[in-house]
Length: 302
Image 1: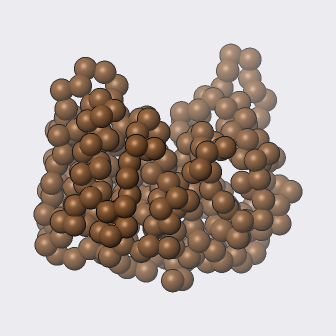
Image 2: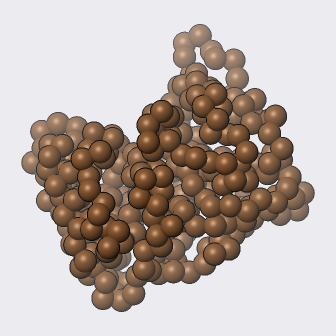
């Protein structure tokens, strides 16, 4: 597993939008914060682009900008401005040969789960599942931004999940992987489908109908993704919707139904989400998940 160098003052962070459109004004707080940390910031042309549709540019424009950032030795981290949808349209056109020579932290969540999975399963590189540019405008996200900074500069991470809910007690150690449930289900059957045995998997999602969550959990279960884990971390499933004729179960009841038969440690309401809290998680790095009646912790152990 490639572990990109952690950042130091003077390093370059590039901001790009490989998926949905984001106005230039929405990254200004992020740029100022990164500069206050002593980092140099490059802003790509896909940020605030002249696109007239959902995407931050054509597939070719988004691909070419991301490819250039992957290739250059000057950039030490790539922060995705936002997610949305679009990475899966370009992922198989990207070349990671020079990235292997000049590895760097790729940062984001939501649709960026496609990149995290590709980096883990195909490139064999660690990455950072963390808040993106818009979070820097949110005063309520200050703890998440602090977590982002700590992870980016190489602090060994420790999460005391006091507000989380224990589902299955136990201790598990393994590489931490995961991300958005919809995107992980979307990748089943592809070369990016995560091989999860012996690993700690985390899941989160936003804005889905309850029956969609049920269907996607079934897809992970039936494709073997939930088998043999070292641990399972269920984060926020926010803004979920019900149909006019009710599904008949809450989001917690749906999740519990699908994981209740497994004997590895499981936690719900963990601080990874489309909302606050959304702590920075280092994908591809070994962690220990410890769940007891008194404490729930997730600790980086590499």
